[in-house]
Image 1 (cartoon, rainbow, N blue to C red):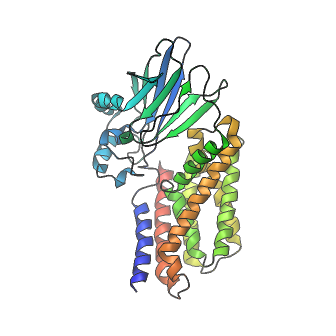
Image 2 (cartoon, rainbow, N blue to C red):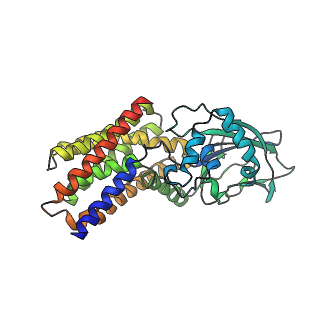
Image 3 (cartoon, one colour):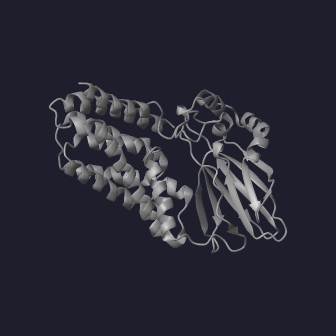
Length: 378
C-alpha cells in the first residue's frame, strides 16, 4: 500500500506542480545578445531579457519564477509601468554591467548603456521581454571578440554575424561561460557536425525537460491510457513524425500559424487526450491519427524556440534533426520518469485505472482547460 501511495502521490504532485503556473507565463528564458560591428570601428550589443527576473534575483536554477523564493518580488516588478521599471534598472545598471564581460583580444572593455526599451505591462501573468542596448568603440587593431554573461543572470544566447553576408550564428552559453573567440571581419566559422549535434540536441531536450510544461502534460496523457509499451510507442512515434514535419516546414518558412492560434490549440490537445482517458479504458486505432494531428500543432510550437535561437545555415538540416532528437529524448525521459513513478509497479493491477489514470487525467484536463481559456483571453 505504501508503494501505491508513493507512486500515485509522486505523479499527482508532479502534475499539480505543473498546474500551479500557466505555461510560459513565468518561464525563465535565456537572454539573447545580438552583436554587430560596423565599419566605423564601433560595436553594439542588443540584449533581449526578462528585466524583472534579473532585478528580483530569480536564480537561473529555476525553470519557472514561481519556484524561486523571490517570486513575489518578481511579480511586483511585473506590474510596474515601463518608466518605473526602467528607473529601477538604471539604479541596478552598474551591477548588471559588472556581470557582462566584453573582451577584445583578451582585454575587457566597459560598454556604455545606450538605451533601455521596456514594453507596456500587458498581462502580468506573461513575462515581458525588454531590450538593453550596449555599445562602444572597438579598440584600434583588435581582431578578436568574446562575450560572457554572469551566471546569476541566467543563460545567454549570443548571436553573431556569420561568415557570409546575412548569416547569423547562435551560441548557447550557460553558467557564465565565455564564448569562443570571434574573429572580427571574418565571422563565426561553421560548427562541426558534432558541435551542432551536441548543442541542438541539448536545446531540444531542455525544451521538454524542464521547460515544456504543456508538452510534458500531453505526453503524460498518452502514457496513462497505454497499458503496454507497443501502443505507447506507436503514439509517441506518430507525435514525433508529425511535429518534425511542421517544425521543418515552419522553420523553412513554407507554412506557419500565429502563436495566438497555435498555443490555445496545443492546450486544447491536452484537454482532449485527458478526457479520452476518462471516457475510455482501451486504446482505439483512431487515437494514433488524432495524436498525429496534435503533433502537427506542437511542431509549430517547437518552431518558436528555433526561430529565436537560429539554425546554422551550413548545418541547417543537421541542427533541425538534432533538435528533434533532443525533443524525442525529452519525451522518452518523461515517459521513463512516469514509468518509474507508477508504471513499473502498478500498471497491471486491477485498481490502476480507478486510482491513478482517472484522477491524474482529470487533473491534467483541468490544467489544459485553464491554459486554453487563458491563452484565448490574452
